[in-house]
Image (tube, rainbow, N blue to C red; front, side, top):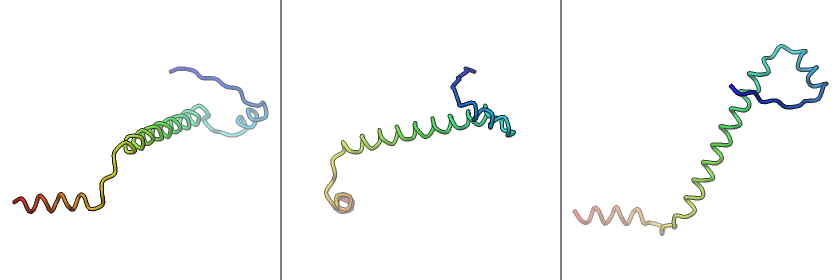
Length: 73
């Protein structure tokens, strides 16, 4: 595993020591969640971009195709 460090105020560190929480695990889970959230957001933005490039069809197009298919048999 890699190590990441960051600075926090002394009062916060003091408060963190007063409670029984595995901070490494909590921070790891938080970061994993944020990464998943960002990846989903990026994928949705990519999908939106791809969908915006697809021309809109006229209303009733699907119905017309179904009718054409049925009539051809």
